[in-house]
Image 1 (cartoon, rainbow, N blue to C red):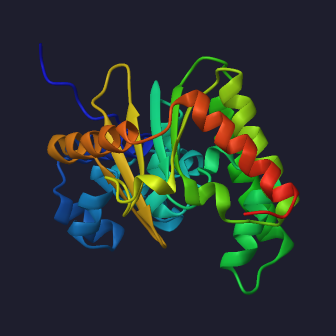
Image 2: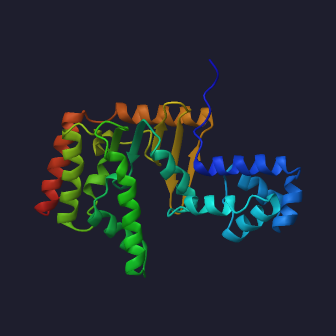
Image 3: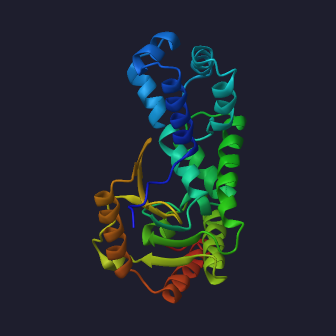
Length: 274
C-alpha cells in the first residue's frame, strides 16, 4: 500500500494548477516572475500553496498565461477571513474525520459561545470597531458548522483544569460556556476529558494542540501561540504530537468524572466561587 499523501487544501490546488499552466506555457518560475513583476521565490510560494497572490498579481498571471481571468476569479473564492497562519487549519477542519484537541487555557474556538468569544476578542484589542467584532464572531460561527452533523467529525476534547477556572467574560458567561460543553459531551457529540491540577506536570503543559485525521490523507498536527501557528505534516512531528496527546489523556479524568467537574465548575462561577 502506498504512503498516504498529506491533505491538500484549496490553496495547494490553486498552486498546482498555476504550476501546470506555467509549464504548459513554457515558462520558468523566473520567466513568470518577470511578467508578473515579482520574484521567482514568490512564484514558488504561490505554486506550493504557501502564499496567495494579491488580486493585481493574479490579474498579471492571467495575462501572462493567457488564462482569461481564471486565476483572478478563483482567488476570490480562496480569500480567507482568517489570519494567514490559521487559514489552512480552518479549511482542513472541514475535511477531518477525527479531531483531537487540547485546550491549555481557553475553550477551543469551535466550542466557544458568542459571549465567551466576544470577551476574548475585547481582551486582546485595546481599540476595535463593531464591524471587526462582528466579523470575528461570524468566523467563529462559520467554524462551528462542523458540529452540524451529529456524528462527523468525531471530536475528542481534552481541557486543562485552568480552562474551567479562568473567568472569561464574567461568571454568567463562564457558566453558560461550561454547560454548553458539558451538554454536548453528555449528548454524545464529543468525548470530553479534564486534566486536573492534581496531575501536576503533563505532556501538553507547554502548548495548545490539535490533531486532525482524514479518510484519504495522512494526519496533521497544529500548535498555536500568540499571533502564530504551526501546521505540521511531517510524519515524525505528527507522531510525536500524537504520543504527547496520548500521554496527557492517560493522566486525565474519565469522561464521567470530567463531566461532573465541568458542571461543578459552572456552578462555582454562578455562586462566585473558584
